[in-house]
Length: 185
Ligand code: IMP
Image (cartoon, rainbow, N blue to C red; front, side, top):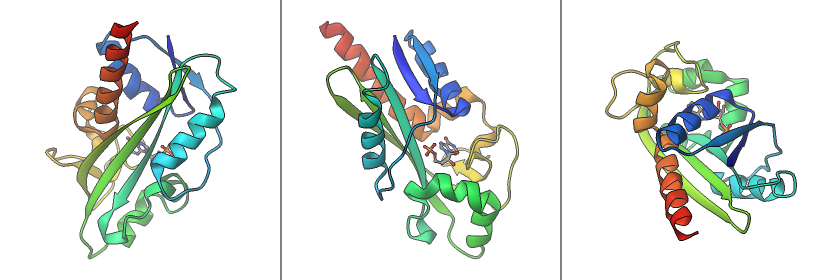
């Protein structure tokens, strides 16, 4: 059984839906953990995972995400959580008035398999909407329209979002890895 460590119920719901569809059991460790400040999501995620090794008694994974907005020079990126808590989606819409609205959402999964840390990433390009669309209000989803969709991710079901999302793409790589390594055992 793999443990997923996070205090975010939305992440858990999306991850659990994908793992279940592939017959993989996962238990949720609902826990906040310390995140270092760095300008790369990979480094933040790797370091957080490394610091959790002594605290979690089996295989586990975490994931870190960030939104990279082109017209803002890549901001907020690794500061996405802080920006969401401070200026929020309304603040982002104000900053983007009259600007190009391209953005990319990135997720990095860090997995401790009991011996080493593996990382898997996923990226989804999209655009920032011109207003807030309430629905499944997870972070930036009410303003992020993934390419190929006509509505923000907040209006997609969990399954629809997983098919196109950064997290869904990172999870596919992770699931392939788990299946491959299980074969070897
Ligand atoms: P973290 O990975 O929890 O540090 O997430 C950084 C910020 O991005 C937080 O404000 C999250 O709410 C937000 N976030 C993470 N994943 C998603 C997502 O899939 N959709 C929308 N917002 C997200």
